[in-house]
Length: 600
Image 1 (tube, rainbow, N blue to C red):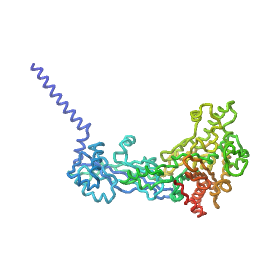
Image 2: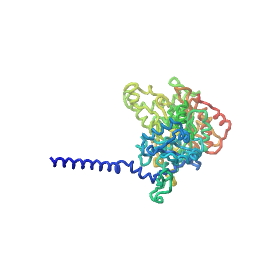
Image 3: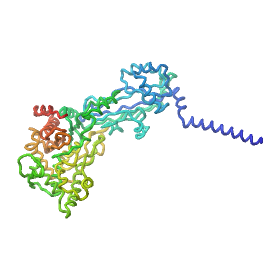
Image 4: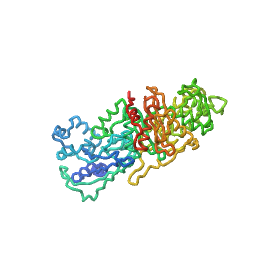
C-alpha cells in the first residue's frame, strides 16, 4: 500500500516536472514572444528601408524618383494610451479610424509591428515626432514614395502600393513584411525584383520609455540596406509629351517603336491620369475615383483594348499570298462591289494599286485564294484546311498571342480557330463565304494596338521583329533582359517586303493617307477604318519612316474618329516629324489634329 502511494507521488512529481519542462521549452524555443519582450526592453531591431531604383528616359530625363516620407507602425501588445481622444487629435484621425487600425494590427499580430499610419509628410512628422515618445508601442519609420516630375506615362509606369498578406506569402517573408510597398502595375510591377533593393537592419539601445540611447554593440550586428537598381527606359520623354498633347480629348492609343531594336519610343493611352494621384495618403480615394471614371483612365489601351484591324490587316494577307504563290505582284482582281462595298472609281486593281487605294473586293479575292486551293473535293473541308494554314501564317506576325512586352496585362487579341467556327456553325457547315470578312480585317478578328505597331516594325525590318519593350538598360552596367535581344522571323521571303514598302509609300504620296505626307521625310503607311458596333468607325494608321532606313514605326488607333485617312494619319505624320527632325512642317495640320474631339 505504502509502495503504491510512493509510486503515485513519484509519478505526480514526474508529470509536474514534465509540464514545467514543456512550458519552458515552449517559452524559450517555440514561442518567441517572451524572448522578444525581454530583448526589446533594452534593444530594438529597426528595419532600414532601401532606396527604390529610379527610372530615366532614353536621354537621361527623370521619369520616376523618390520622396522621403514617414510611416507609423504599431505593436499592439506594447500600446499604452491613457487619453485616446488626445492621441487621435495628435494623429489627426477619428476614434473610429483608431479602432479600425488597432483591430487590423491585432489581427495581423499582437507582438509584431504593422502599419498604422502611412506616408506622413515632413511637416506631419515634425509635428508629432516629439509627442510620439509618450505613446509606447508606436514607432516612426523613414521610407520613400514615388514622385513623378512629369504628368506622363501613367499607364506604362504603373504605381506601387502596400503589400497584402497573399503577396507576402507569394514573394516570401524574407523580402517583404506587412506595411511594405510593392509594384502593383506597369514597369513598377514587372521590374519589382530590380527596383526594390534589399532591406537592412540596425540594433539600437532604448530606455524604458523607448527613447534611443545609441547603437547596440557599436553597430556590430547591423546590416546595410542595398538600393534598388535604376532603370533606363527607351521612351523619349519629349516625344511622349508631344504625343499626349496631340491625343488630348480623344480616346485611343499611340505607340512608336524603333524597329531594329524593338525599343518603344512613346506609348500613350488616352484618356490617362496624373501618376501623382496614386501616391501618398490619398491613394485609395483617388484610385476609387479613377476606377469609377466612365472614360476608364486606368485601362491601358495600347496593351488591353482589342479592335478589328480593318484595312491595315490587308498587308498581312498580301504578304502571305505572295509568299504562298497564290498571287504575284501583277495579279489583277476586279473590284466587284456586289460582294463588298469599296471607295474610289476604280474597276479593277493589281496588287500595288489594291494597297494604294485600299480596295476591299481585291482582298476578298486574295483571301479566297488563300483558303480555297482545291486540296479536298469538299468545299467545306477545303476551306478548313486552307484556314488552318492561313491562321498558322498569321500567328507568326504576333497576332492572337502576346508579344511579351515588359508591362503586365498584355492581351493576345483574337484570332479565331477552326473549332471556334465549328462551335458556331457546326463542323462542315461553314466555308469561305461565311468568313470572308477576315480578309478585310473585320469579323471575328481583333488586334491590340501593340500588335499593329509591331506589324509596322516587321515590314520596316523586312520580316522580323524584336519583342517591344520599354527598358533598354538595368543598373549601372545597363544590362538588358535576354528576351529583348531575340529576333523573331515571320518566315516571309524578304524580297516581298520591298514591294509592300513601295506600295505603302504610294499610300502616303498619292493614296488614302495623303494627310500623312511630309515634304522632307519619305513616310510609308497604311490607313484603316474599322467598323465599330459601339459608335462611329475607329480610325487607324500604321507606318514607318524614313523609307530606306526606318528609325521609327508607329501605330495610332482613335476610337469613334471615322476615317483613318483624316484622323489617325495626320497625327502619325506629326509624331514622325517631331522625332526625326525635332520640329513640325505644318502648323495648320497640328492645329487640325489638336482640335479633334472624339470623347462622346
